[in-house]
Length: 358
Image (cartoon, rainbow, N blue to C red; front, side, top):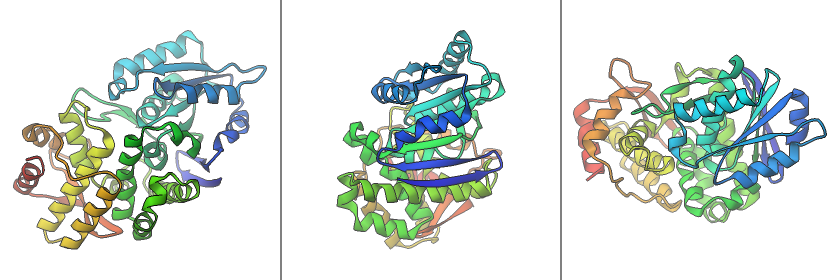
C-alpha cells in the first residue's frame, strides 16, 4: 500500500492506495472522533458499504448506511434533499462523519451533503470504481446535476481522507473497469508522457487487474491531480487541464439525459478535442492516431454515441466553465502536454462534431 498527501488551502489529507487499504479506515475515523457516521452508497456496491460499516463499528459507534439507486439520476437536488432529511432525522451533529462508498455519483452526492449539512462535516471517500480512484474522489469537487447541465450545482469540500482499496475492483463490471481508462488516458495525453508509456507497455497486466501495476497507475493519476489541485483548488486557472476531453463529454452526457457512461463520453470527448487540435494545426496526425490506438486498446473503440448532434451543440455553450457562451477548450499539443484556454471557431466545432456523430 502507498500513501500520498494532498495539500490544499481547503485541507491536507492522506490518500491510501493499495490492496487491503480498508484496514486504515478505523484508525482514520478514530482520529476524527466522530459522534455519528453516515455511510452513503448505492444499490450496486451496498456489500462494500456493509464491509466498511463492519470495519469501523465499535462499542460506541453504530454506523448508519444510506443507499441510493445506482444511477446518474441519483445525482439530483431531490436525492440530495432526501439524504439531508435522513441526516436530520438521525440527528447527525457537527461531529458527524459522512463516508462515501461507491463511484463518482456517490462521491459527488455524499460530498455535497457533507459540505452543506450544518455548514460542513467531515467526509471520507472510499472509491470502489477505478474511475473514482484515479479522478473524482480527489480534489474536493462535489455536486449534483441540473436539469440540463452536469455537475451544475455544487461546491468545493475537501475530504479528510481517501481510501482506495484495489480489492474493491474485483466486483466492478468488466465494461465499467475498461471505461475508466478514458480518465487514465486523459492524464497520460494531457500531462504525463511517462504514464502513456506505462499504459502502452503494461496493457495486458492492467486489463488483467494486476494489483501492483494498477497501484502504480492509480498513484500516478492521483499524484498528477494532487499537484494541479494544490495550485488551483477552486478551478480558476491551471486546474482546467483536468477538463481535457470533458467539454464534448459533458455535452454528450447531458444531451443523452445521462444515458451514456462517463468513461465512454470522455473517450469521445478526447477524440473530438484531438481532431479540433489537428484542424488548428496544433498537433500532429500521429498524436490523433496514438490516442485512438490507446483508447481502443483499453476497450474504448471509436463508436459514435447515439445522440442528436444539434442537442450536443446546444449544450456546449452552457458548459459551467463557459464565459458569455464562449468555451475555453483544452487541446493536446503532443503526448504528455495539452494547453488550456483555446477558443475554437464555432464552425469548426460544428464540423468536427457532425462528422464524429455521423
